[in-house]
Structures are given as C-alpha cells and as structure tokens.
Length: 548
Image (cartoon, rainbow, N blue to C red; front, side):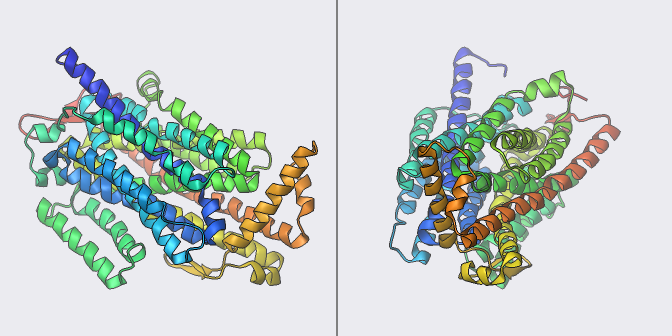
C-alpha cells in the first residue's frame, strides 16, 4: 500500500490487525465446536446427521451474515457491521449455553443449532468487512495479504485445538467454548473508532446494479439454490415455499441487475467455491473427530493442531509463490486441488500416528490456499463488483459447507459405518443402530450407529487406555482387549465408516482440479492471468501488476 501519510499507514495496519483478530475469534469458536461434537453426541444422543446439521449451522449462518453484510456494507459503513457482528457473538454464547443435561433432545438440539447459527452470522458479517477492506488497502498484492489475513483462521484452529487438547475430558464444554469471547473482545476494541476506506467500486460511484452486474442471474442462481436448501432443511419450510422464496430472491437479483446474465467466469468461480466450502470447511468440521476415532482422541487433537500450524505458516508464502515462482493464482489453485485429493486418500489409510502426520501434511498443503486465493481472483478480475461479489462467493462457500459438506459427511459416516456393521453382523447392527434414519438430498435413508451407544464404547476404550498407560503399557492396541467382541465390532465399523467417508470426500478436489486446469488453459490462451482495474470511464482495464 502507498500510504498518503503516516497516520493513514498506521490506520491501515490497525485495520488489518483488527480484521486478523476478528477471523481469529471465528476460528477459535469453530475449532472448539469441532472438538466437542463427540461430547454433544454422547451427552444428547445425536446422530451423525444431527451433529452435521449443527455444524452446518456454523456455515449457513455465515452465509447470511456475509451476503447481507456484503450488500449493505458500503451503504451502512464497516463500523456498524462490525458492531452487529460483535452483538451476534455475545448473543450466540448466551443461546448455546442454554443446552444442558436432562433436557429433551429436541430442546438441546435447537439451542445448539441456533446458537451456532447466530455465532456464524456474526462471523459472516465480520468477513463481509475484512475481505473487501484488505482488498482495498492492498490492491497490488491482494493474493498475498488476503492469504495473510486468512492465516488467522488456522491460527484460531490451533488455539481452539489446544483448548480441546488441554481441557477436553476435564473441563465443561461450555467453559471451552466460552473462551472464544476473549479474541471477540479484542477485535471489538481494535475496530473501535477507526476510519474505514470504501471499495474501489464505491469510490468510483458505481450503483448497486452495476456492482451486481458481474454476479447477475448466473451467480444469483447458485446462491439462491443453496438458500432453498437452507429454507427447506434448517428452517423447515415446505419444499414449495422454500423454492418459492429462493425464486423470489432470484427475481430480485434480476431486477437489481436488469436481468443481466452475469459473467461466465464468475458463475464458474461460484460453482467451484461451493466445492471449496465443502471440501475445506466441511472436512475441517469433521477431521478431528475422524482422526481421533481412527487413532485416539488425544492424537486427533494433536494432529488437528499440527495441520492448522502448517496452514498458518504456508499462508505467509503466497507472495513468494506468486511472484518468485511465477505461479498465477489459478496455477496455485490447480496444485492445491491435486494435493488435497491425494491428501484425503492418504488420511483414509492412516494406521499410525507418524503416518498420520505425513498424510495430513499433504492434505494441509492442498487446502491452505483455496479460500483466500479464490477471493483474490474475484478481487483481481471483478473490481466493479465491489464488496458484493466477494461476499456472495464467501457466502456460497459457507452455505455449501453448511448445507452440503458438513451434513453430507455426517451422512457418509452414518451410511458407511452402518453398512460396515451390518455386513459384519446384521443382528448387531439392529442392536446398535440409531433410533432415527439419516437422509441427505436424494440419497436413500440409512441407519447409522447410535451416538450414545458408540459414545459408551469409546468411553470404555478411553478408560482402558488410561489404565494401560498407568501400568506402563503404551501399546494403543492393548486397550481393545478390554472390549467385548461386540464392542470391538461396533468400534471397528465406525472406523471403517470414517475411512470410506474420506475417500468419498476426495472426489470433490479431483473435480475442482479438472475445472482449474481448464481455467488455467483459458488464461494462457488470452495472454496470461492479469488483474483488472476500473478506468475513469467505468470500464475495466488490465492492471500490469500480476504475473503472466
């Protein structure tokens, strides 16, 4: 950034650090929730789909916050949106903490679902501010600084993972979750009284319709389709009402944009970002649970922290990769998708702690640059969209993670674990199956393993491991002798379900790789990837700041 004065430079640094702290707060809450999913399942008897839906509210709420915030942020001002986010974070804690032992399952579910939704709404509102703010402050190095901004996410995952690692099993989940309020207060103080810049589009006086034009009906269709899933699933509206409401919103987009079809590249980016949300955030919400089940819960937490540290460090290298290695943002995305596909398959085969480190390193290398680099591409190629396109695309990614990724992986876990147990012993599956079936989109309903019954087996195994450790036996397999043959079969089926879930998950980055490769070829054909800027005439022109 070329600061006009020292005071402006200091202000820019403080705003950047405030945005960093805000994303850190959201990540701490996300990570702690991922670590206490098993606690909620054991305490309230939730199925994998129910836990996935609660986790999904952490994404769908984000979608509403970032889309609504992105649309009105230039009109209301960044400060008011930050204040709203701060309020939502406080209220979310109050609602979530109403869930307690002895409540009806439905009551506890509602408290946890809507508390998570409100938390995520605050998260989305914050990112509606942070992303365009950083893109505006650092127009010549968007990829670099957006990656550094989003390095706060894995750092928050590390903090949240350490909270679960040190407090899990001995401290109430409410205390663990409540610690996200510490960075929340800090970002509130850091944003307080700061003057905020406006986006390039807003500075040039573009109207709402002009900002929305590149999104158009194509981008609106993707966002509204995901909203229809939310209205029908989370809100519980009848299908006709859900799709009718989503259709009305699409018509509103058409009216605002004068029924512009939108840029084809924006449409493709929205589709791919829906996959990014599912494969990155949807998987992040389950990976600690899955690796902890395959190995041990403690090792799962350590691996989660390790993976997040790898991501944190790598996100500071985007400028080096882009400018020194001469790899464009699209090239970075191609490499990431291939690594993520390989990494997920490697994680599905882990048997040892050391092997898990290697597999998760590959996966971390893959997922590190997805989200911020996709935002940078939108900022580079569509500056006329202002904060709107960036926010809607972030909302698409989060809504996909909430309505597709998280519950989809929960369904896969239920399906594959149930199938594995049924194949091994149909009678045992009948004894241990969940009381309610799990369904997802157009897939058939299945009966997974009951959360409370599996939790009891896991608790017994944890006690056996603790006893063996006290006796000086560090062999993790020794504790299995304390389980009955039936309990070993149930636990083994749950692990097999986790492995097959990760393999199924790897098809998403494989599909993303194919799309990114086609985009890479397209940009090569037109002379290379370049950023564009808004000329005084209102048209976009090439900006000579990007690598070819």
